[in-house]
Image (cartoon, rainbow, N blue to C red):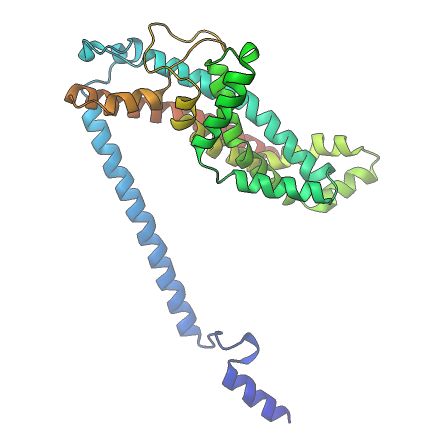
Length: 307
């Protein structure tokens, strides 16, 4: 009877099922083939990115200078124009968006993961947060137009840089919340139980143990979210970003320009000088993004070493 069952297992592929590969040579061969496949895919992506970077830097090198960074854009003399107000506006947008979205995202994630009970309303909230991460960015722009520009105009200043930051915060909040919840979920339950056993309250355990341990994972999501926000043009176009202004943003209630919309305006013009200016603007935007991401990565690594 045992011999018969063993024979049946061999015919059907054994305990692992019909897809289980008993031959070690076959399994190692498939492993090597998959390794080669993902390596080639990675190299293709890196090569395409390198070609694009070289092409953009080559086109924009004729315009890149300190004068370009410190000058206002000009439609009459584009060769003397610059990107200064758009650069300052993007820095304001990035800073205000981080100040608004990071505390809200971390707080919402902590509540949903540590405090919220398993009720129907909380499950609906979790499903909606996951779905909101895939909503097109222009929808957030329309939402910001209706709420922050029209309904709350006396508070936000209408089409101000604060309005743009609030709209971008709505855009990236789902990403921050999901990433932070996953980081909190990965912490062993023994950490919580040990804190409670020593007499600590739930908030003390969260503040002193869980948040420091979850911050490296949460910062990864924050980096990706802010990178998306700084490159978005559709939402801020809807909520009133300026395509041209004669002053630099000096406060949260001022009008503003932004690097993505300035690049869009230049690249939509047929003259070669505007195309070169757009390439130079892309290089500046990548530099701003690289500096912001470098700071966030340094902060993440620091918390990783502490934890």
